[in-house]
Amino acid sequence: MDIGAIIQFYRTKHGLTQKDLASGVCSISYLSKIESGAIEPKTDTIQLIFERLDMDYEKITSYDEKKIHEQIDLLYQNITEQKLDKAKDFSDELEEVLTPFHEPYVQNYFELIHFYYLITVNPTEKYNLNFQELLRLENHFEGKKLFYFYKIVGFYYNCHLNSKRANEYFHKAVEILEDFNLKDPEIYYLLALSYMGMQKPIYSNYYVGIALEQYANDLKYRKVTDCYHLLGINYLNLGAYDISETYFNQVLKSKPMGDSPKVRSRATHNLAILYYRRGNFEHALKLLHEALEHHSHLYDIVHSNLIIAKVYYEQGKSDLAREYLTKGEDLLQGTN
Image (cartoon, rainbow, N blue to C red):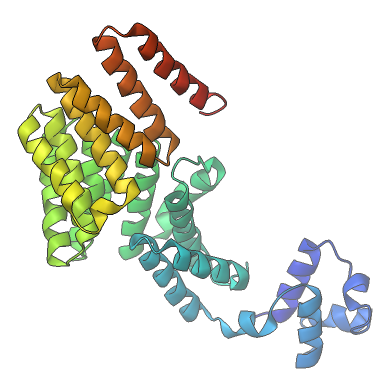
């Protein structure tokens, strides 16, 4: 690593002059020679300079490109396994040790996977600047990393309800997956989600079936539950209410997933829609109010309020329908 260049970069970033940084550590001329690479400085001097720059000398100098690459792989793995606390630790560590002087391929790889972490933690955030910069990196990746690129870009579009664009990128990812004999059931699940968003439930069922088989073989039962939920939605949209009801009940009965407030709230919400479409309004209302007790995301809360309003409207209870529409409007004030 070019220690002098790193010191100069972070000194400038902190808005310090050479005089500011050298004060009490070394002479200005000595610091100037360090930054220009004219001399090999003493370790204790470098450590004092790094401390003043609020940087960990031992940590930064112990991370080479190979180790950083391995840490980024682990960051990706923890994101896909939804171990977001561990992912945050890896992300924070990498942000601390990665400098502009590391190889571009490592910096690009981290930018891609860090973006994946951000949109996994907060799917509704736009991150427009980051995303536009990310799109320019497509030609810098190949093989497995290009697969990650297409998957992550598709995931971003899916989070922002652009199912058609998401679908295009997921298909590109699947082509690479098959060319390089990789295994990633999540890409088939995401592809199924995009087809569900495009209102093509038959295509969605095909791909969720692939994902379901692979998740079951890997004993990833939380993911199996997600697949059951998506199948329930697809059969609901196909009007096959009995089959749909069976899948939603499988989700609610699964252990421990069915006890999760997030899983339970969405399954009961979708069951309520099923009963609403069947004309069983009282059962639909009971489930919708139960779902509201467990919802944590604004979209889910507003959507349940909307369906409650529809039920009351169908029952001729216009005042109650208006009350829940107003609640939904109030919740959406100041949001996108």
